[in-house]
Length: 160
Picture 1 (spheres, helix red, strand yellow):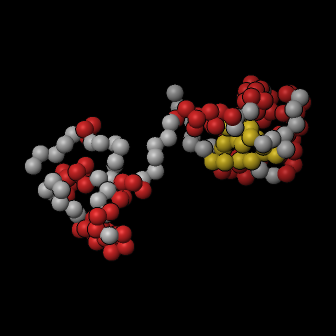
Picture 2: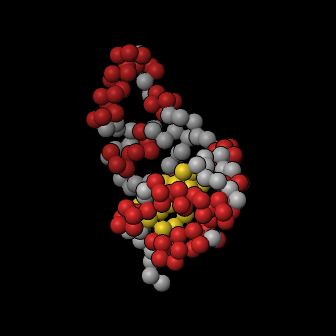
């Protein structure tokens, strides 16, 4: 038998048997796993309710619009503006050498997340006095105080 191309598969019922016939052999023939599940369901529900029961349990698809709106509501413009200000003054905050080893990634809930490329540099900077110095310099340059600074590993810079 010839297998159906992917785009002709019915997306309304992704778990129906006919959609998977190319992988399991004959049209309409259940796999061993499907047969076992349907026999168990027939014992619980009665044989007339078994066909398509798994497709009915599948979650309904959601539209992307409300999900994107919910995501965007979680982003605060003040945090984005602060991060951009920090990026503009980054070399003044850490110096020329430090600015090459670290990158400001995000500001969320008054916490600045800084990515580091080299663990030795992170070891030197991830101390309470250094964190305090970073926060003080950012406050001097941007006028906004931060609650904390945290360091996370990030991929090395590409050499262009």
